[in-house]
Amino acid sequence: MLNANNLAQLIPLSELSGDALNQAANLAAEISLTPEQVLFRKGTADIHSFYLLDGEVALDSEDGSQPLRVKAGGDTARHPLSRLKPRTYTCVARTPCKLVAFPDDALDHLIARDQATAYEVTEFEGDDPQWMFDLLSNPAFSKVPPCNLHTLFNRFEAMPVVAGQRILKQGEVGDYYYLIRSGCARVTRQVGDKEKILAELQAGQGFGEEALISGEPRNASVTILTAGELMRLPAADFDSLLRQPLVKTVSLAQGAELIKQGAQLIDVRLESEFGEGSLKGSINLPLYLLRLKANSLDRNQTYLLYCQSGSRSSTAAFLLSQRGFDARVLQGGLAGLKKPVSR
Image 1 (cartoon, helix red, strand yellow):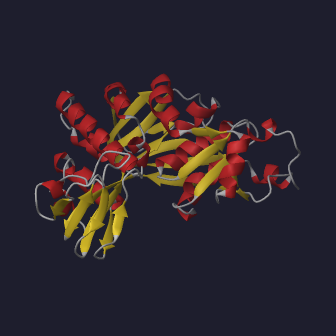
Image 2 (cartoon, helix red, strand yellow):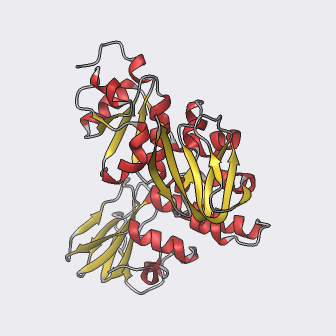
């Protein structure tokens, strides 16, 4: 079974941090070949990088020259096989082989992010740069372009907190996004004369994004449960550096194609609104319940979110993206549709 130690021998994975190597192991797919089996052919442009772990392969340029032989354990095997695309060789197994494959884009993004983070730690002026590495385990930050990271980390402001301190109050205007660096917090919502607990948040989790994305007053309160420290990000920086990379909007035509490919429609409006009419095939998951219900969703599924105008669905997409889901927003929401919704 693959582990970080196996991958540390490969180039350029040998330059990754320990945390990034563990993430690379999750991206890897093991492949077995029988003698004479073709891995890829000259002229193809697949989207994977292949490394030889065991056995021997031949790389044939198909120009009449002698094929190149690559044996596992040699220096050549530490590099991807025929790295250039389109492929300049046909790769054929000469013996039983074991290989590992990585998606090119995912691996490149991981390497770029890890290198950018190493730079941030070098430049960071605080006394605990480890929080940056911990933060990047949050799926939300794994999607932030590496070029944004330097500015993003510099814009966060440290904020010590004590147990019982209320950070957000329902009904107030939002001006910051918060991340819990240490400690924990509780999210509550006042419904009539009752206070409902929506979630308890731990170190590495964020809050306050709903009001910043929707432009509406805070829809919940957040109270600190144990002493610790928050990192807060001003609204303008949140929008340009964090929200935009995470909230992906699709047109009606693009949404229809996603549905054909198996995407699930989610209506994030209130139950009463959903009951008045919705898009066929939708499930109802109101925004205010999203924190509680997110774990019941399938992480291998693509979700197409909508509300009336797109405001609530944008917030929902951010919340789901933070948790590692593939979430898209239907541009314009129901208000942008020409046909009436089903009842």
